[in-house]
Image (tube, rainbow, N blue to C red):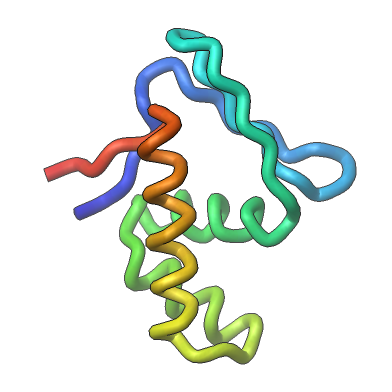
Length: 89
């Protein structure tokens, strides 16, 4: 299932390469480092689909695709728990 930002969530790439996600609806602000910025961009480039995003990052970074998928899953779950993203059926 694709992952989509919740309504009213904005993403900003910071000067230091970090990522800031902000929900205008809930006021939740979440800041992440450059690795998360790359994960966010890979997700957006792949229509929110985790598998191709993980494969892209694994190839770029020379890591095991299954490990990358696991890391991406953990991060997306954190974003979901914060009310920033949701799964689209």
